[in-house]
Amino acid sequence: MYWFTDTLAKRLFLLMWAALVASHLAAFAAVHLLHFERGTPARLPVFPSLPPTPGLPQAQREPPPGPPPPDGPGQPPPQAAGLPADALLLDYGVRLLVIALAAWFGSRWVAAPVRRLVQASQTLSETLGGQEPLPALDEHSGSQEVREAARVFNRMARELQRQFSERGLMMAAISHDLRTPLTRLRMRLETMDAAPALRERSVADIREMNGLIDTVLALFRSQTQAAEPLQDTDIDALLQALSDDLVEQGQPVAYTAAPAIARARPLALRRVLGNLLGNALRYGGGADIRVESRGRQVCIRIDDAGPGIPPAQLEAVFQPFYRLEGSRSRDTGGMGLGLYIARDLMQRQGGSLQLINRPEGGLRAELLLPLATPG
Image 1 (cartoon, rainbow, N blue to C red):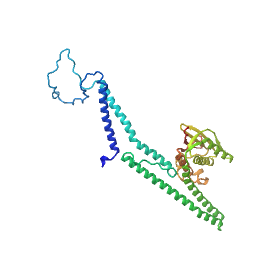
Image 2: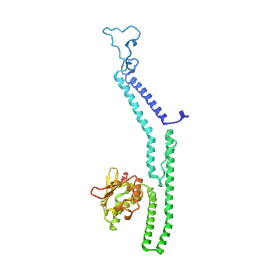
Image 3: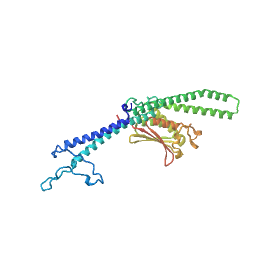
Image 4: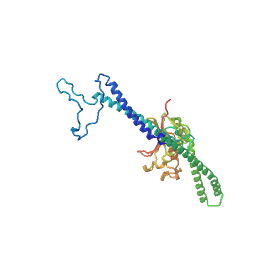
């Protein structure tokens, strides 16, 4: 039965009706208790009425029966109909206050399920494909529309998680099973009687296919790293360790130390930084690392002096298997998944990654992470 169903429309109707009734009752009580109890002449209050209808002939408005009041001196002037000015202000002030309070409460009451849905949707993007439990909305509280939306959201979240898991398992199985025939094929090519140049090109193609398989497997291993719990991470210590390792290998890396504690996943962040530093060294000839605070965030900047990226392709490079022509082609390394994985790992820990062409030349990779909550 519709009349016995808890719907959003019915809740809004009852809220508006209750607000109007409460405003009238509160105004009536305030005027009588606060105004007429303070010595105002005792008479029945006459609330303001509508103005005379325009065009109505005066003859139709007959005076009340009885002798006309005397007009002599000493007679009290006739009382004006309606409330005095101060009582009228009190009346409308109380009405407006009650309706405003009801509107504020009602807006928060109606928007609460939407806020919960938004929060669950934001969490869903971080938990899909990982080991953390999916966000779930309460399917048994709220109006009928809210309960239906919760059921649809929960069912959609479970279906997306199932598809992500099946896709990952399928790709991992295919990539793993391809290794065996590729290995056999390479061994046959290396032992068969063929021209050395042709044999070397064929073996190089097989190695490239193996590299692509490794990259695809790394993509799905990143989901396991994304399931790593968030924790307070010493950014200065992490960057110092990475830069020291690269300097020991003879790489041109400069790091300006700056203390900073961020809320992050250390293994995933280390992988992101390693990827960006490798790109800066490979394509830019060096890396300059700096850390700074920006409000409630930690900013990590990695600058290089390379050719940069055309402005129209600054976002395209984050797409899977996207490679730039020229110096950043497949010939110089990379399968086009490194930046995609890096941004995905950053977003899964509440951060962001963007690439910026520096005015003085070169490329800047800028990472933002939330500051650790002091405790």
